[in-house]
Figure 1 (tube, rainbow, N blue to C red):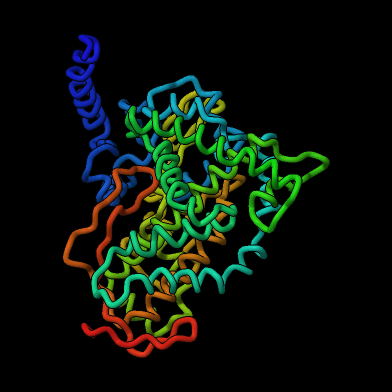
Figure 2 (tube, rainbow, N blue to C red; figure 1 turned 90 degrees about the vertical axis):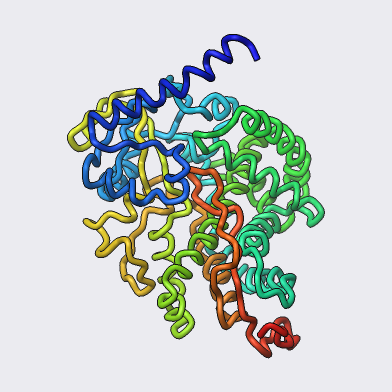
Length: 440
């Protein structure tokens, strides 16, 4: 290790501690999302920020941290003063900034007019009607994945359903052959980490390597689909046209990359976080058994209660007053979606899970021009996942081992989530009667 690296490694912790001490002295609360306790349970800190310093300046990151619902909602809708185009921002305090600068930006990190054109083209290829037609197949897929559990009474929800279901669905939509889906999942996992501020140097190297692999894989497929379209998402993107303009090959690849991550990671977290919340509130799970028609409403409450996307950010295009602070032009604002979803000024008794909650207008899929275009698909997959779980198992509980959380700050979810189940006797799947498991 070079002397410079040795010195940096020794000085960095001292610098961080000094900055955090400064933060505590100036506001009485510290926002340090790299703290493992925050990764496991961020909600106590969100509460402190809302109550003590809702417009919180973080000396360590240079960001203004916003935790209240009305403020987060307003900023997400204001794409004129709070922008996504990070290439315009000259700061480099985030660990993942240099890597993201090397990647071609997706719709997620573009502003109008580029965002308007690309979003219009992608919307034409990603319609709710297309998604609605998928319901029977998604349900069959969920049953098929749980069939592989066999008679086991304990299994990992993430490995057996929550991760696989959205991965297989988006892979089929894109047109990825079955034999390539494992590679597809690896790419998704690597790309998802680029959103995290604690991205390591090795992870960054893998992201750039994966971008090259992704490009090499899809470039010939896109050209083939332009000449000979089929009924997959690549073909619909390649053929999409608005006012005589089509997506370029590079734009199509970047859009596929975004859909790969959005179609996998967020829905996986919604299913995992959602079932964990229901197991922590068994009376709510029982209510869904008794009244399965509540499941769509429950999905909205689960999105609110433990959001799959906890944090978003915007770059400030001009000096803007945010509460009692001024966000300076060129700075960045951190928007705590998870904190906004627990704001008592918006939601009564916000720390309580209530699957009958009406009008739970969560911010989990964003607001404004960057509202998640895959939201209908995520809702469909999550609804079917919970319907199938309740249909197949008379009892669901926590497994013998503790859940293992991913080291993520933006995309909150579990790596492992063991659950214990009791199989329902005589359940019929795909025309076959399943014998009750011995443990039942």
